Length: 107
Image (cartoon, rainbow, N blue to C red; front, side, top):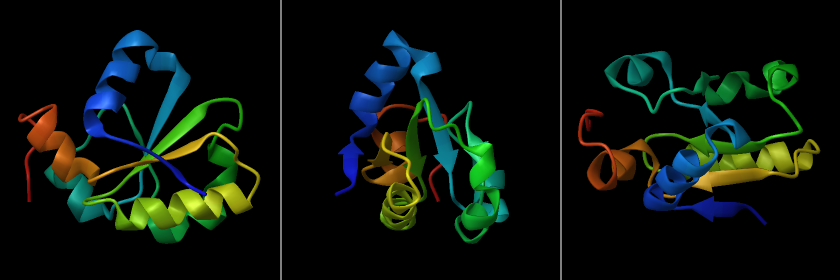
């Protein structure tokens, strides 16, 4: 089962230990151009299977997309591929913008 984290919880986690987390942005290039949660690794959803080697297995991966649907699917996929520290960002970057960082544009 995929774990989840709210934007506020993620912000607190990043403040306490920013090196513990790898943010994985699975949105498309045009979405990424609008704004992102930084620092993050950008691998569009459909490219994830071909780019698994870029993801660390020794750190927590928090996956995000626009609203949380694609990232939930990717997090589940990563779990089947042996990643055991994967979390989905509930509400995606849209909720992040609303609850944590209004400087990240909403779209």
